[in-house]
Image (tube, rainbow, N blue to C red; front, top):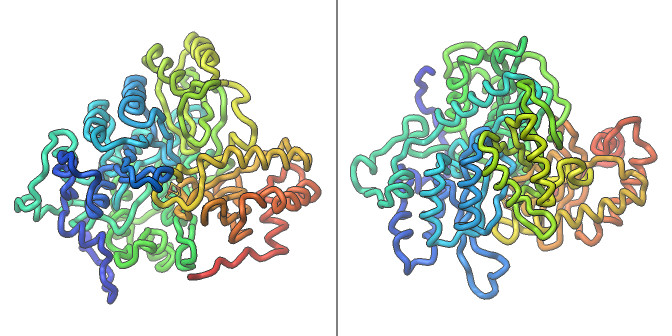
Length: 570
Ligand code: SF4
């Protein structure tokens, strides 16, 4: 990639605090190791909280216990490009969840694993052990490129392996180079931030200030859009000819996050920019990332994502900027089409003759209950079948891949012994739903999400049964706040937390992830859900075209009659 001088936009507005923090300690070391070693300190300072994110760690407190005072806990997120773990790594993750966290593994909507409820004296050991398992957490959060996603299902093309290799390559190429991560979590030492080598550190890609905000990448293989590619800052849509990966269509400028009451923030779908051959991949990734680095708004973190640069400057400007940085022209976009964002549950055979099983994980939480011991079952699979790969999906599910004919029967039996179904795993609405963690761990949660959605879906299913549309899948997603971690703005029905028991409700997303939904209710008490939804579901049943989904009916009929609710500005 050709060298491009940083062309930071000149702004009258002051930089936000996080920018000053990064400039002051560009190694991102903060005072983390010293605080970790000091048993008298219950938590990290506010500044270190920001640095910890770059290390894949969020400082949180158990919000159920707040009345009795703050109990600090930490959430740790893995960097798992493409979401692939070996059986050995799965055992290590399971051990960490059991011994260092809250005995659950949380599959995220970005193909990662989160450990929740980690107390301070277990944080250091967890971080060391996760690295020993050859999984790290560097840049899993923070103002950097985060976990790179890639389609996990092997059935449709043998080029999937190449796409996966490319996702790992991009992840490595965009990693920050600071020594602080290794020093703190592997060597257990506090980096001397006054040492000139550390004080004057400049990351070759990120500079001293890193990115203005987070940056997200997904690789996807049409016609399956299981990565929700248009919700990413940067998307690579594989172009496969004669089962050979020839290059990618580039998408840029997607993102979900917004803020209640701030109409200058909004979810946005990525623009399709153009095609490039595979050998340009890393150059293009760096070019897009550095456009964000150089043009993202560092004076307002709520508007610092790449999507606002695209919105303001336009796709033509962006394309020219990328072309200048890679030193060549992009080609015209190659045609592609998406048909679904969903996972296909159950056993399927890949083109390599190996089987893979997509298992439903309710809200991404792998745990044992009295009747369904999914966590133990997966561990037993990993222990007995060392060649099986554990692949995480962006729909919060898990795939067991690389399974032989003989192993298939044994794995099925083992799962059934633990109460884990392999057929008809969940009802239509549960199987299509997603929720973010929110309460009690996420500090930003305004309403319940993961703990509440399954019950709400039961209630909506009862209405659907009553109305006579039990055979209809409706994609329902819920988040505890407008950040949108579970991509509620793509759902056919999206619930976005506004306060305890209260949600903003969005309607009209589609199945293939190419349309944003719109605001239906600015504030709905959860107790009113059935009464408010029922008339719409009745109309849907009466008016739908053959094969038409709820979200498509809403878009075709309801939004033509009724303007979406204008969300109040602060
Ligand atoms: Fe937390 Fe909001 Fe993300 Fe939910 S959507 S996990 S509440 S930041």
